[in-house]
Amino acid sequence: ADRAEAYTEGGDSNLQREAEKVGPRNYIFDAGQSRRIRAELFKVIDSSDVVVAVLDARDPMGTRAPHAEDFLKKEGKHKHLVFVLNKCDLVPTRVTAAWLKLLSREAPTVAFHASITNPFGKGALINLLRQFAKLHTDKKQISVGFIGYPNVGKSSVINTLKKKKVCKVAPIPGETKVWQYITLMKSIYLIDCPGTVQPSGNSEEDAVLKGVIRIEQLRHAEDYVEELLKRVKPEYVRRTYDLTSWSSPTDFLEQYGRRIGKLLKGGEPDTNAAAKLVLHDWQRGRLPYFVLPPDFAPRAGGADTAGGG
Image (cartoon, rainbow, N blue to C red):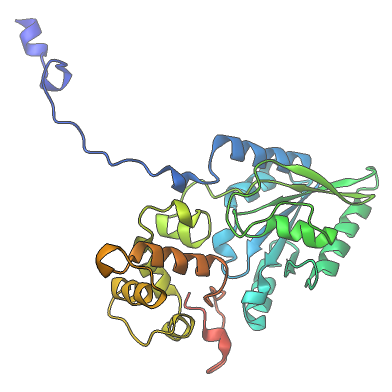
């Protein structure tokens, strides 16, 4: 009788239950969050005297790594943090200046355009690193670690400083697999580290549009074009793709697919292939877009209202 009273349906393993419907997990959205890459990140921070956080000038706050910054504040107060606003050539000068002013309250910030032949900000960054080297008179040389999201251009910044291609770069995320030491000058070493992503808080759209995901791995690329079209001003989309108007993201992709000849059997436009091309253009900076700093007052009719952010 006691056993009968203690019986619960939930604890009966012999009852047949419906299988829980769990869709297949899309592991590509874990890019940059593997235990190995996170371990690499903290290893780089531990080994560095100066930590350079490379940010995308189009979305500086969105490409910061708060967990790494918190770790520096708690565990590495003796280490120096520097922000580098890379890709500042894709953003109006006034917007870059406003971000510099805002971020400089937290750490020294340098605007940068990574290019071996025509760089910008290279002298300012090297001078800053030299000053840090002078502070550490007890050491023969200091180590400078580069951290940031995949695809913000960490390896490109190092190549610019070295004036030659010492790190493998590609316009796709995840090209840097392991970390490497590069000598900048007798007193300064540079460490290139695989990109690290904030462990949580990125929606799938954010992960795709921040360049964390390799576009060719997306199964349904067209799902992310709606968010992209919200962020970019329509006139820039019209100018880039030579389309006059569209009623929905699907209509936009169908028109673009027909225009460039991306067709399936039966002559239907291949919207997935068209979407991947549009997302590639976004990742490479062909579509003008940037986030405005808080309290930014754009000029009337000026180019710096083009953020769409």
